[in-house]
Structure formats: C-alpha cells, structure tokens
Image (tube, rainbow, N blue to C red; front, side, top):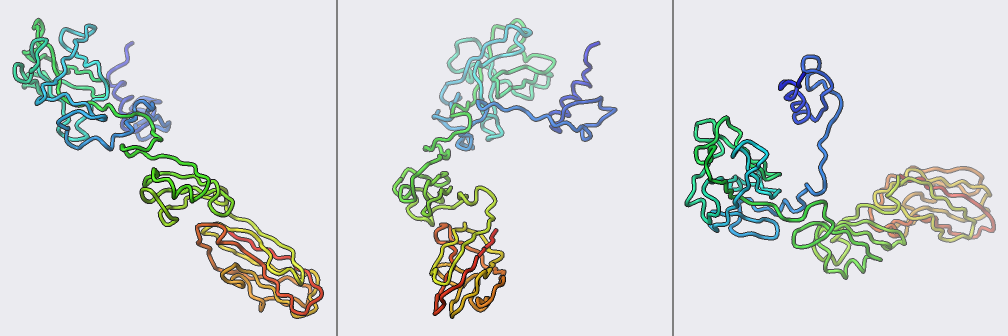
Length: 358
C-alpha cells in the first residue's frame, strides 16, 4: 500500500515545523509530543560566508559576491527544459545559489516566455507572474537549486504544451565564498593571529576589529587570548582579554610559601583578572623571638590581604583572614601575591602561608 499524502504531510510538519522525527501517526502522537530531535544537516558549501555583504537592493552590476541577470542590462538567462518531466512543466537554470527575496524584495525572480535565442526577452516575450493569471498556472522557483516548476494545474498559454517558447529568468545569484571563513579581507570575515608578544600585536597594522589574537607571552610568561576592539591596535586598551593560561581551566587554587624570620619579600604567585582571594592563612610552626612582622599583599599594597595586627608570631598557632578584594589587572604579572617579612630583631621563627583564591 502506498504512503498516503496525509502521512507525508505529517512527516514534513514534524520535521520542518518542529524539528522532530516522525515516530508515530498524527492521531497517536501530535507533533509537539514527538521527542526525537531531527535537525537539518547543513554542508559547508551551503553556508554563504559573505551573506552579510549582499546589498538589500539588487545591484545594477555584478560583483565578486553577486552576479546579476538584469532586465536593464539585457542579461536575462535562458533556461533548459527538464526532459524528464512533463512537457514544458519544469525548467532548469543549471545554476545554484539564487538570492531569494528574503534578502530584499527586488531579488524576486522575474520570468519571461519567448522563443529561444532572444537577447531581450523582457521586451519580446510575455512576463509570467508567480501567482499566475487566474487560470491555475502559478509557478514556483527553488532558489537553491535554480529550478522553476509550474506548480499549478495548468501551464500559461505562452508556454503551453506544443509551443516552441522557452523560459528566461531575471534575478541574482550569490557567488561569494562559502563555508566558514578564517581569512580577513575587505569582505569583513575575521582572522585568527598568533603573536609572540603584545609588541608584535601592536606592530601588525593588518589586525582588524574583531580579529582573534593568541599571544604566546602576554607579559607574564603565559599565553593570553585577545579580541581586537579596533583596527591596527597599538595598546592594551585596544584589546579585550578573553582568556589566559590560568583562565583556561577553573582559576581556583591555593598558593603557598614557607618563610623564616629573615625571608624578606617572598612571591606566592600570580592570579588572573577577576580572581578573589577567599582566605589567607599564616601557620606559625616555630615562634618568632623578636619584633618580626608578616603581612600578605601585593606590590601596590603590602598588607592588602592580611596585616600584621591579625597575627601573633610569638606563639605556635594558625591565623586566618577572609579578604574581599578582587584583582582586576588584565596582565597576571600585575596581580602578583607576595608575603612580606620584616625581620626586626628576631633570630628565629618559621611559618607557612597559604592563600586560596577563586
């Protein structure tokens, strides 16, 4: 038994209208109740990479992106009858990627019927309208395949069975790049760059607004990923930092250091922009016998995260603070956490410092 038209419609309704596969009859399972997703597969060759550059009004002349078949230029295209279909029913342009009127009303295809070999069919032939003449003689054009089909019950008289006329079309085709472009040029597609350091970025005038830049050493010995905020960036404010080596994973860790009474300034490590120290711990393992002080902070504020008043170094014990400061510098080297030990007159003392951040 053949598949019924209602079954075919149900399949299309579920596929096109709801993005679902048909797993049962419409009576048993309505389209919203279908549960298996069925997306359309789009090949790279079907993606118009420069579609944004198609003018909203059909241009008067052809370009590297749009080829025009125009009334005014007498460049209408003569089509070929599909010999596998009914007489004069289907016509092929043998060209794909026609621009549909969704890009602008002037891209609506125009159709003419006249004898073969005409240079001005729009003047010598009959224009056939998509909605027909009122005699069930409408046509439908598949803009992707470039095939015109008279979908109505009847054919227009100008192309009726037994006539020698052929079909001409007027419109425009997309002829630009297809696929996902990674080249930067006048078409506006983004480029990816890889530079040794920020100075190499500033020296490259070919970098454009929106380009993605991987910098091997962003100033702290670690890589950084940036997006250019303008053409030819020459300073850090012209870039947006989107990721760092620290940020490529979950930027949460605990930095530790062991110090003695005369350690001086000890580097704990760098944190990335947006990092917040959530706890600072000083664990005194050997009491300090003099006036030593220990603070935890950074180069701009030595006791930003813990001041000496929170710690009694004269006894073994654990001392904790929970700071609220968030580091915002885009270069990790400007977010370097340090322990500062002022020896005073001490001759002994040991401690372990732990800074946890997220």
